[in-house]
Image (cartoon, rainbow, N blue to C red; front, top):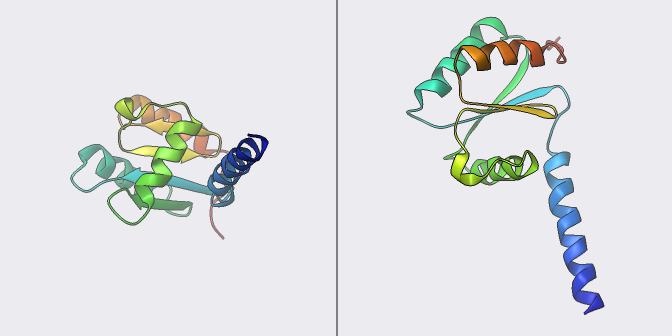
Length: 117
């Protein structure tokens, strides 16, 4: 029983640290998907006003990106039923969806990031 508990604890620690290890401190992550109009508007806005920032588009239909999105959703306590795109990670904050309010919040949160040199 003790061995099972320790194994589970180790697995959980590895899972939580894996998500953290992959996150660059000065990078903004945008989880998006093809055909998502809100995703396209968000990315176009970022391309126009934040083109010198380290912004990584994570298409959830490619590779393990959907799994990463699910990990972040758990981290931020967003249920899979309520999960949507774009899902934007800015350090310890997230924005889901895109509209006037999300754009304002993005501008505030993006101030903690530095443009690429």
